[in-house]
Length: 123
Length: 127
Image 1 (spheres, one colour):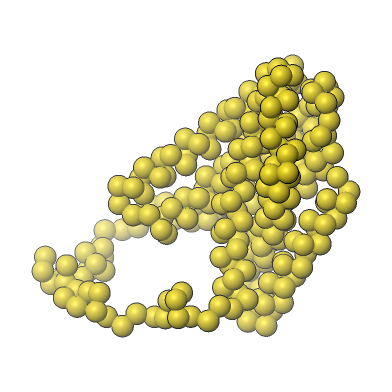
Image 2: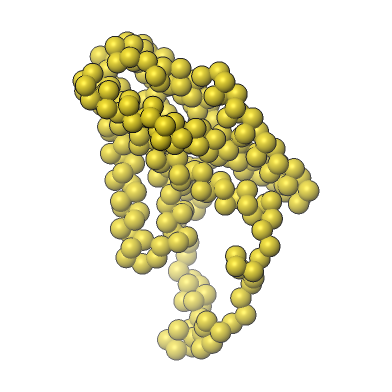
């Protein structure tokens, strides 16, 4: 193996088979967020600062609740895909795997927590 | 490893000696704002959980978000959100192959910086 370059080792093995999946996933979630973010900012923003009863009443309505739920799902999916690139650039080897798993766990936990909370408020 | 001289090869100029430019600064800011938004996102999810739990718990989370420190985090995050949104639009434009010339890319960079500040001020004024 002494005279093999990295490229020589990779030639003939075929592609990693995932292609542009990650790139496309970022595009889809970014376009979705382009719509969701203004909706969320201008539904969440005005109610922040209100009393508990008002907040609960507000998010019991379909529109604010659905916008908040969608923003949390798509936002954390976008974060998870985005932070993956950050981790892959700066962390390597075992710590990289741990960081990727940790970021994914955090993202799914936040989605579950957010949806549970909104469902409990809305129902 | 065949690279006998690995580590001794000439490397392209890196961050420490490369002059900062509008394109490089707006690029790294896209990454920093996007990932820093996790703080506000987690705080907001916590706020929702508290609202769903009890008025007492809500008072705690709401108090943190509306303290001077919470205000600071939320206003900075609002700017980060608009910056990252506009920078994302810039990437969607670039993905079509348009506006990649240096002058146009720098023009978009200025629009992203100016637009994000303007949108932040507007949002704070309206909301």
